[in-house]
Image (cartoon, rainbow, N blue to C red):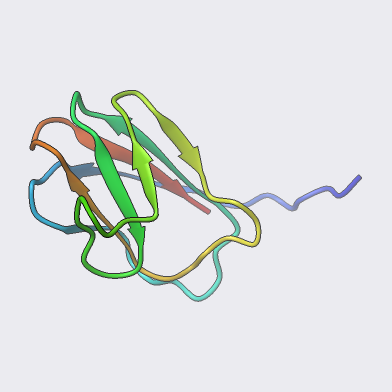
Length: 93
């Protein structure tokens, strides 16, 4: 069993938008990232710049939770919602 040393997590709320917004900025060393879609609209996440409803990596329905797989992608992650309401609740460590 591997024991992880204590770390601090950064939590943020990203307001939903019908145009592409940055959900996570690029960061050199990332151990984990999670997203909870706290919106009634579908959230499209893209591992990279400029998400759209046809160019995305992960689609999250209302109330969905997503944990990035290991090894964690540390580049920019953009998102766009089908309609602007609510937010994405993010955690990064």
